[in-house]
Structures are given as structure tokens and as C-alpha cells.
Length: 375
Image 1 (tube, one colour):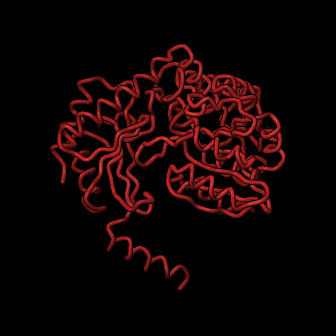
Image 2 (cartoon, rainbow, N blue to C red; image 1 turned 60 degrees about the vertical axis):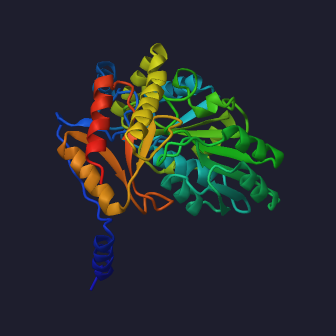
């Protein structure tokens, strides 16, 4: 029977406690949200919403085509210029998603005969980029510049190291300075995904590469998402102008994909400008993360010390993680639940978002609910 193997896989997922399901949320959900990636609390900010509305009124509901045909508007160009300037890079290129941006950067910068050195904890989009690239991929230990250095030393030709800046599972930061040094010793490029760093790390939220002194370097390429700190949707690649020009001509997820919807571009641009005026939002997100971690560990929970705005709390098993998250929802708190195969280390956990707009009362309430619902 066609697709009969799907039933076998479904049964295996049920036995392992790894079944996933969609839970549509209402617009006026009463739950306290510590599950989304809205780090700065901008997704519903009046200025961000107004930016989306004005863009939709001006440009319509969709981009109408690929970026190289009709999908590039003056709004897209303005967003690219301001995003590059804010983060300290020469140029930027906007994509329909952060996933598409990562696929573009890795595949277009790793031709035949090249080596990609990929961190074992990288996001799925970087992993898929490595799989689709024509170069050879070598996976190395997590956050280990020496392992990257050794891998690069085995290759004579174009090479690339690929890493998240802030890893989405535990919220730990990559040693960017060490990675850049290892790459430069071997003439390799460095591609980093700053999805969880933009808006949180660096001066005024300019990102982890900016904080590490790598912004604007001619051997560093950064991908970002517009759907987390900027509260919108889409992604971008930042780097030297010649790299961006190469992506325009070689990146399949740019050439063959419809451009980002104008409303999303307008919302992202409004959020970027708001962050520029209110840089304290980045520091507040980090402060909330530190506070959450301190209170959770004081309550006897195993929480990973956050380097940005992600706080991870270990769970005993996939089944108990699911039940823990469900019990939190029943008590009015929405938390993330990460289980295999989404986590590379096989450890299930609750994933909490330290949003800049959380009050001290909300933080305390969240800790009480999580502690009270522990397995």
C-alpha cells in the first residue's frame, strides 16, 4: 500500500513518546507566554503592527514574485540597508525565512571541492544546508575551536566553518573569537547563524558577531531571522557586498523563492527602528534570562546558565517533558518542550523564553508554576 511505511513510523513515535501535534492558539490567549521567540516583546507592539499594516496597504498582500522578477520592492531594499548598517556589515539580503537564508549561505558558499566544518549542535537549517551543499561536511564537537582548527588542517582548498552563535536548545553561546581565529589560520570563511543573538547580544542588540568584534569582517558571513527579536517573519544574510552579490546570482532559495511579503518586511523594519531608539530592550532580555535561571536553580531545578535569552530546564524523559509542559499550560503558563530528534544530545527539556517585556511578578509566577509542576 502506498505510504504504508508511514503507519510503522507513527507507531514507533507513539512507543517512544515522540508524537508531535499542532495546538492552534487564539489571538487572546490567557496563557503567560514563555514559549515563543518574541525576545523583545515586539510582535504585538503598536509600531510594529502599524508597520505591517502600512506596508500591506502600500504594496499589497504579497511580493507577487521572486526577488529577481517582481518580488523586490523599495521596502525590501530599505530593510536590507538599515539591517546591514545596524549590525555593522557592508550589505544584507532578505529572504522569505531564516531557514531559507541558512540554506542559501551554506550551499552557495560551499562549492565542489570545499570542506564545511559544522558544529554538532547546529540548528536543523544549517545541517540541511550542509547536506545540500556540494562540498564535503565534517561534523565536529560542540563549541570547540580546536576541533575546527584540526578539521580545517586536513583540507587543502576552499573551506567554511558553520555554527550557531547562540544555540537554540540550551541557549549557550559559541566561542566566536576562537572560531574566527581558527578559520583565519587556514584561510577559511566563517558562517554563523545569529537567529538567537540579534536583538539580545551586542551593543543595543546588534548581535553576537558585533559583540565579538567580527562585524564587517571580510571573511565572516552572518545569517539572521526577522521572526524572533524583530517580531516579524523572514531572514537575511549579512556580509561583504561581493558575498551578497554572489548569493543573488547563485543561491537557489533566493532565486527561485517568492520574495518576503511586504507586511513582514514593514513589520521588521519598524521593529529594527524601534530597537535602535530603545537599545535597553536587549539588556532587559538578558537580565530576565539571568533572573529566571537564578530562581529556577534556587528552586532545585536543573537549568542551564543562559548566554542570551534562552533558558533550558532539563527533564527526566520525553514523556515527562511533555507532561510537564502540559501541566504548566493547565496552570496558565506556556513553555516550550524540546525532545529528540529536535535535540542533538537526546536530552529532553523545557525551553523558556526570557522576554524583555516580562515583569518581575510574571517571572516569579513562571518559576512557581514550573517548580510546582515538575515531574
